Image (cartoon, rainbow, N blue to C red; front, side, top):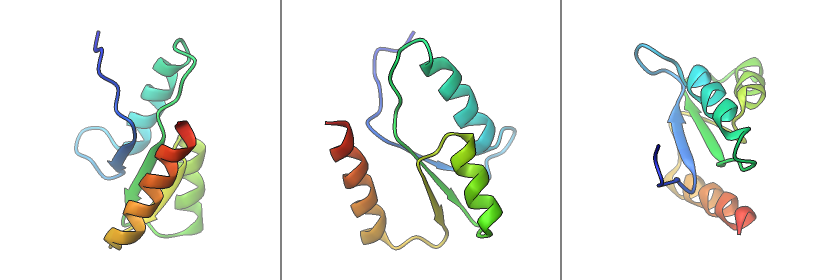
Length: 85
Protein backbone atom coordinates (compact mmCIF):
# COMPACT_ATOMS: atom_id res chain seq x y z
CA UNK A 1 0.00 0.00 0.00
CA UNK A 2 1.28 3.44 -0.96
CA UNK A 3 1.51 6.15 1.64
CA UNK A 4 2.16 8.92 -0.88
CA UNK A 5 -0.89 10.66 -2.30
CA UNK A 6 -0.69 13.11 -5.23
CA UNK A 7 -2.29 16.51 -4.84
CA UNK A 8 -3.69 16.60 -8.39
CA UNK A 9 -3.74 14.01 -11.19
CA UNK A 10 -3.14 15.01 -14.80
CA UNK A 11 -4.00 12.07 -17.06
CA UNK A 12 -4.07 11.58 -20.80
CA UNK A 13 -7.17 9.69 -21.93
CA UNK A 14 -5.32 7.88 -24.73
CA UNK A 15 -2.93 5.56 -22.91
CA UNK A 16 -1.73 2.15 -24.12
CA UNK A 17 -3.33 -1.00 -22.67
CA UNK A 18 -5.73 0.94 -20.43
CA UNK A 19 -7.32 4.25 -21.25
CA UNK A 20 -7.72 7.20 -18.93
CA UNK A 21 -11.39 6.41 -18.38
CA UNK A 22 -10.54 3.00 -16.94
CA UNK A 23 -7.76 4.53 -14.85
CA UNK A 24 -9.98 7.13 -13.20
CA UNK A 25 -12.84 4.67 -12.60
CA UNK A 26 -10.45 2.30 -10.80
CA UNK A 27 -8.99 5.15 -8.77
CA UNK A 28 -12.44 6.42 -7.75
CA UNK A 29 -13.45 2.91 -6.67
CA UNK A 30 -10.39 2.69 -4.41
CA UNK A 31 -11.10 6.13 -2.96
CA UNK A 32 -14.55 5.07 -1.74
CA UNK A 33 -12.93 3.45 1.28
CA UNK A 34 -10.79 6.48 2.11
CA UNK A 35 -13.52 9.08 1.99
CA UNK A 36 -11.32 11.45 -0.01
CA UNK A 37 -10.98 12.19 -3.69
CA UNK A 38 -7.88 13.40 -5.54
CA UNK A 39 -8.77 16.14 -8.06
CA UNK A 40 -8.12 14.92 -11.61
CA UNK A 41 -7.75 16.58 -15.00
CA UNK A 42 -8.35 14.66 -18.23
CA UNK A 43 -6.14 15.63 -21.17
CA UNK A 44 -7.18 14.47 -24.61
CA UNK A 45 -7.26 15.14 -28.33
CA UNK A 46 -10.97 14.23 -28.23
CA UNK A 47 -12.71 17.60 -28.30
CA UNK A 48 -16.41 16.88 -28.77
CA UNK A 49 -18.91 17.79 -26.07
CA UNK A 50 -19.66 14.07 -25.65
CA UNK A 51 -15.98 13.47 -24.87
CA UNK A 52 -16.03 16.15 -22.19
CA UNK A 53 -19.18 14.71 -20.65
CA UNK A 54 -17.71 11.20 -20.68
CA UNK A 55 -14.56 12.41 -18.91
CA UNK A 56 -16.56 14.20 -16.21
CA UNK A 57 -18.93 11.23 -15.80
CA UNK A 58 -15.93 8.91 -15.43
CA UNK A 59 -14.60 10.89 -12.46
CA UNK A 60 -12.49 13.79 -13.75
CA UNK A 61 -13.22 17.30 -12.53
CA UNK A 62 -11.80 19.03 -15.63
CA UNK A 63 -11.48 18.08 -19.32
CA UNK A 64 -8.69 19.74 -21.35
CA UNK A 65 -8.37 19.43 -25.10
CA UNK A 66 -4.92 19.32 -26.68
CA UNK A 67 -2.99 21.44 -27.35
CA UNK A 68 -2.98 22.90 -23.85
CA UNK A 69 -1.99 26.45 -23.06
CA UNK A 70 0.52 26.10 -20.18
CA UNK A 71 -0.64 29.18 -18.29
CA UNK A 72 -4.27 28.03 -18.46
CA UNK A 73 -3.30 24.56 -17.21
CA UNK A 74 -1.28 26.08 -14.35
CA UNK A 75 -4.25 28.23 -13.34
CA UNK A 76 -6.62 25.26 -13.33
CA UNK A 77 -4.21 23.10 -11.31
CA UNK A 78 -3.80 25.96 -8.82
CA UNK A 79 -7.57 26.34 -8.48
CA UNK A 80 -8.02 22.61 -7.82
CA UNK A 81 -5.27 22.67 -5.18
CA UNK A 82 -6.87 25.71 -3.55
CA UNK A 83 -10.22 23.90 -3.30
CA UNK A 84 -8.75 21.02 -1.31
CA UNK A 85 -6.98 23.20 1.26
